[in-house]
Image (tube, rainbow, N blue to C red; front, side):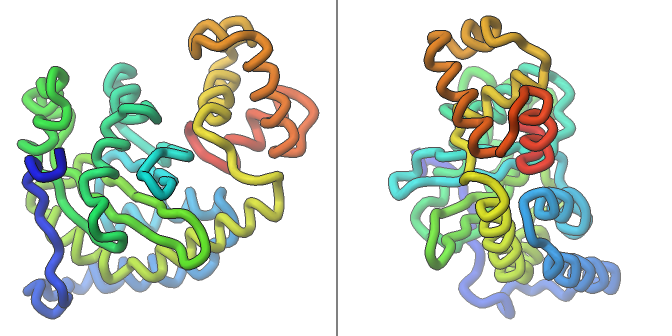
Length: 260
């Protein structure tokens, strides 16, 4: 599938990009770098991505994925989105076959590569749902892959980047890349020290529906799993988040992982 996508790869040297940072971009870049140095846990990382990072790199939706060595999804966290259509949000966030997952796999060749996926290529990825592009709900995406020195690979997917800003976005992301990587590393280390390890994709799904106020029976039906399997997921959630109740799990889980 990758070969059929029109992916614009970044130049080898940033000096070849032809971009001169505007004064306000220089200011936003410095603010993003300075605030990144203060990130120490996932909650702070999420706030940084929603604030200084997004101000520097304008976009409407962003997902962060943790990938295994075969590009399988270990975790998917949608850090923010403005896609008010629930169907569209599900299409983006689905941890098994959602758009964010498919986009993350389009640049698997270069572990540090940033790339842009055009609206036409999004339509090819969406197939039967390509009308979302025709209606203007989805357009250009920018993807950045991060390989931690002693850990997993992460992929940041930015959705709905303005056409006239996409190339600048990739260039600015390249300049910010090392600070993004270090902030993410500290966030992971801080959170795993605080709690009992990262939540799995399924545990995040359970947490999401708990946050929606669904009962265990309703969650079992939605996820098509048995009551016993759900109970095991909830038990692991409680242990990892170090909580004793559903309310505590939702509050602490959302603080740590954002809008799941």
